[in-house]
Amino acid sequence: MNILWFIPTHGDGRYLGTSEGARAVSLEYMQQIAQAADNLGYSGVLLPTGRSCEDAWVVASALIPATRRLRFLVAIRPGIVSPTAAARTAATFDRLSGGRLLINVVTGGDPAEANADGCFLSHDERYQITDEFLDVWRRVMAGEVVDYEGKHVRVQGAKLLYPPIQQPHPPLYFGGSSPAAHDLAAKHVDLYLTWGEPPAAVREKLEDIKRRAAAHGRTVRFGIRLHVIVRDTTSAAWDAANDLIRYLDDSAIAAAQSAFARFDSEGQRRMSQLHSGRRETLEVSPNLWAGVGLVRGGAGTALVGDAATVAARLREYAELGIDTFILSGYPHLEEAYRAAELLFPLLPVELGPPRAQTNLTGPFGELMANDIKPSSARR
Image (cartoon, rainbow, N blue to C red; front, side):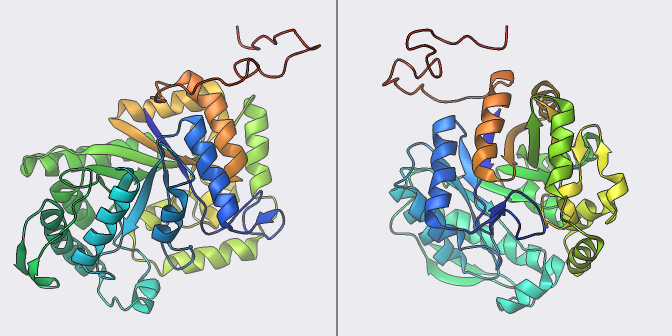
C-alpha cells in the first residue's frame, strides 16, 4: 500500500464547523505536519486547491527544504492556467525537489469559484478543456514542440526547455465521478482517485474506468481519499467521531449543504447523498462515517474504529484494486502520528529505508528506572 497524508492549508482544528480549538495556517505548522509525515513513512502529502486554501504550489515549494523523501501532490487547473505555463511550473518543481512531484488534475466543481477565476465554462466544457490541456501538457513535458488548435486551447511552437526529472512527466492523479470524468481518466491519467464511498459503489466506478481505459489500450491505477478516526478501541473511535462534530448545529449544516447544492460536481452530489444533511444516518457502510461531509466539501467520509478494524476496511478497498490511500484526520499533526503508529504495523506499507538510530532509547521508548527497556503491549 502507498499511503499519503494531507496538509490542511485551509485551516485545522479539533472540531468541525467552529472556531473552538481551531488552528490558524502558518508555515511553521505546515512544516511540522510535513516533517511528521516524512519521518513516519508516509510516501507523500496532498495539498488542496481552491480559493479557501493557501496556494498549493507556494506552500509545497516552501516545504521542499523541510523534508527529505516526501512527495507533493499538487493541482494543475485547466481553464485557469495555460498548459505551457503549468508545464514550466511543474518541471521546475520536479527538478528543485529532486523528482518529488505528483500532479493532481482538478477541473473544479464549484461554478461560482470558477467564474471568479475567469472560467465561465459548463461542467462538460471544463472536461473538454481539460482533455485539450492534457493533450498539450503531456506532449510538451515529453519534449515535443507542439502546434495545437482545439476548441478551447490553441498553442503554436509550444515547448519546454528544461524537462522534469520524472519522465515523461510526473504522475497524473485525477478524480471525478461523471461519465465525462471517467472518459478523461481512461484517456489521460496514471491514477484515478475516488472519494470514500461504500465498497460496492467504488467497485462499480473502478470497473467502468477499467473498461474505458482498455478501449484506449491503457491501464489505470487506483487510489482513494479518506479520513481516518482510529483509536485503541472501537468505542473510543466512535466517541472521537461524535466529538469531532459536537459543536455543529442544524443551521451550520444547512448552510453548508446549501452551498454544496450549487456545485455541479457529481462527486460532491454523491458525497452529500450519503447523509442527506442528517445526523441520524451517518454510518453509511460498516465503519464508514459520513459526518465530516456535513460541513466539509470534497472528501466527506472517515473510517472509524480500532486499528484492526480500520486496517481490515482499508484492505477491503485494496482488494478492489486500490493501491494508493490518501488519509487525513483532525487535527492533522497529532493524527498523522496516531494513524501511522496504529495502522502501519498492520498493513503492507512500503516505508522506505529505515532511519539510522542516533540514540539507544530510539527503538524502545523511554527507558524505565534508567536502564530497563519497556516491552511492547502487543504480543
